[in-house]
Length: 484
Image 1: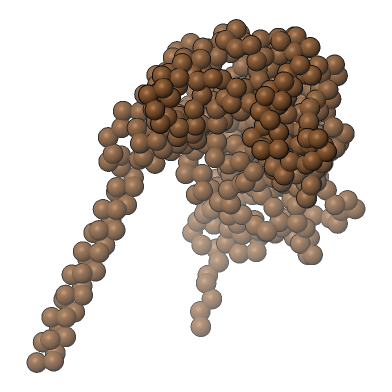
Image 2: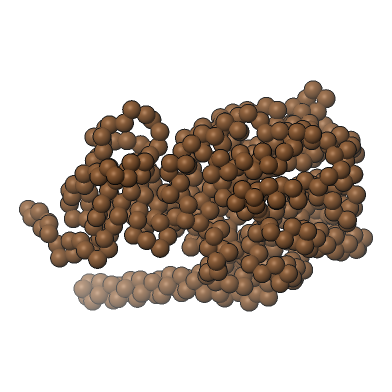
């Protein structure tokens, strides 16, 4: 009787296990299959395959520029320091809003030299730049005809964006235009729509926003894309239909336009990814001041990381508090991003007079010195598909069997471990800085190798180049596993 009971109980447990597995499988299918009907969700499942996006994907390193009226106070007001990001100082209770808005009459950046800015970016090795056309305060660095709150009505009077686009294009650097949807200066903007009056005012704001975006695309036709910010307001996340139609209109006006994932919400107010988990936009904009740790974290999307030099200062701040990132740290961040299929974008916050602070110039020069020798491991590279090792990062040259080992941590032994997939072997190994130098490759077990180098006098990151043969290897099993 006990045996019969145990058999019955075993059958019950087994049945429950099978049922649980079926439920889990069904849950996985829900995740992988679009089950929520959406009118304004993602319009594409996979990555873009056109040449414009392929070029963006191969940039590797970019520059971000936050510049506007907030650079004048530089994080201070009447001797008091604002304990936040400098570009948000207008939101501080310690400064009257009308007083901040009057900074337009002090904006006269006589040291602004777009050619000099572009040369700094070129020296650093940047392949693209993202520039704030207007931040949350609504001040426009171009002479927009839809508001008086522009550079045209400042003492400077001249367009900033046009000369900047031309200067960067001349240096072979593509331009992305940053645009804040949120606009503290525009009368129709609302954080939340609570009344009929709010709704009427916000309809005017939507028309204003559309006009400005189309104006930018028409005025600066060589700009490659739009980088959006300030789209988290309760008012904007309810504008799925409007934002969707506007995006379609912009793409029709400018075929190939690149738009990040921050622009529009879906039917339920979801941003970045729609309610089915699909990316809305051409690349993921969610990696702000952080970098993924493994390839699974990016979910197969294109992406870039935007990074500040101090912890969280975008616009110019007179005081850089906390840890200031070093050249080697920023190079490592660049390598890590590229190793996971993304781009790394370093922020600069010019002063109110238009000059760039010396610390940023020095960082750009230091990164540039390394990039001049090693850019082959960054440009047009991607995730290499190899298991990460403690010495640094792998990048793979797009469309080839060439793999780069970007070394940041040298083992005491001087031997760098490489683990390859089956049916893959190393044809040659060399230093990128000394291409005629052949390094010793030692096979230590099946599909695992040590790359041996000589001791180095400096402490700078360096690159080893591997040419892989993906048709050879020890597929049949040269090494027999040990038996007890």
